[in-house]
Length: 172
Image (tube, rainbow, N blue to C red; front, side):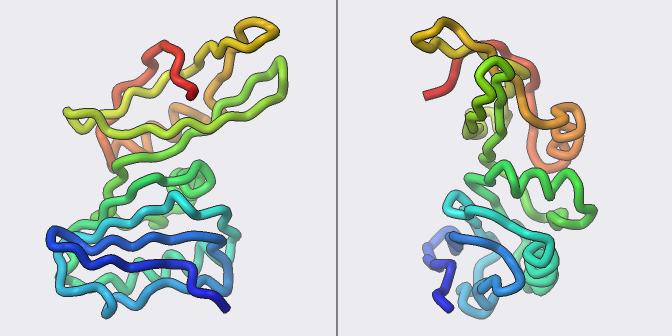
């Protein structure tokens, strides 16, 4: 089985880059590979999926976090991972903080789905529109957030500061 992570020990923190699928065969790094750091950064941008066995494996791995690690910063959190944060109690330990994540948006007219990456601004806040208009050759199309936005935001408020419902085009 191929390893589905990379570890980079940097001066300010250790970075773990996870990729592929988190399932019953998930291959997480041993915490001992991470140099004596109090801060860890997890980049989840290369993750493709997670099943129910992967949820269990993730939770078992995060429970083994050493006491000296005080903060785990999450970056590029995929929409499917965010779903688990909102649905599974204890999925994300309290010392894990989300700094960037993807939300799905859906256009009912075209049945098209797009994802948008949200990153903290200089005040460590996110601005999240409930819906957006996207210019297409056939005219403007409205995309609406494809989550129970209020539930997602309530859950995320404990993990990051959120400024909600800003209107504006933002798809690349």
